[in-house]
Image (cartoon, rainbow over all chains, first blue to last red; front, side):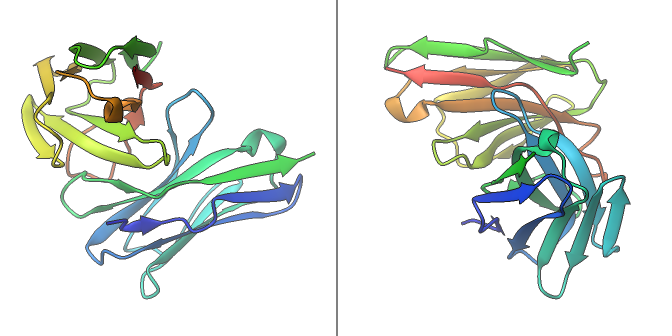
Amino acid sequence: DQQVKQNSPSLSVQEGRISILNCDYTNSMFDYFLWYKKYPAEGPTFLISISSIKDKNEDGRFTVFLNKSAKHLSLHIVPSQPGDSAVYFCAARPLGNNDMRFGAGTRLTVKP
Amino acid sequence: DTAVSQTPKYLVTQMGNDKSIKCEQNLGHDTMYWYKQDSKKFLKIMFSYNNKELIINETVPNRFSPKSPDKAHLNLHINSLELGDSAVYFCASSQDLQGYNEQFFGPGTRLTVL
């Protein structure tokens, strides 16, 4: 029962270009969406989030877009840097509790 | 200062043994969680504790039992370990259960059952 899906297991981009990571969800009760970044042998670290009342949230090089009607969100990283190479997890939770569901992750590789 | 810490980082043990993983957070958060990342890399929630009360139990076998001696600690006890328990286990915490706040994760414990 994968309520959060990241259909691209990997993505490779050139340094300086834009990275776009995609995520789809099925549960219409999801109210809050987050992106986490994970390096090998470390725990996931929070990157950016968006609530369902917004369609865009920006933090420096990172922007998250939410399309509620399509049940789709995306993370844009621009410009991409080699240090951004990591696995990115999309997560979502319903209003009122922190029962967070994660996607399977997308491995981003930024080539110098 | 590590916000969420787990010990041990690696744990190798035989089938049938009982083991524990410890977790501590120094963020003053009210809610703590345990996640399992399986071989397919899916992160799945196992438990959450809010003010020492179990909130979620995602159909986890009762061989797994979380124990919270205080708000800053949530330990995971596993009895009669099975091969399928091999995974990376992550502890996490958040400010509370309901607000728009993120979860902070520990570094993970890689459990290998032989």
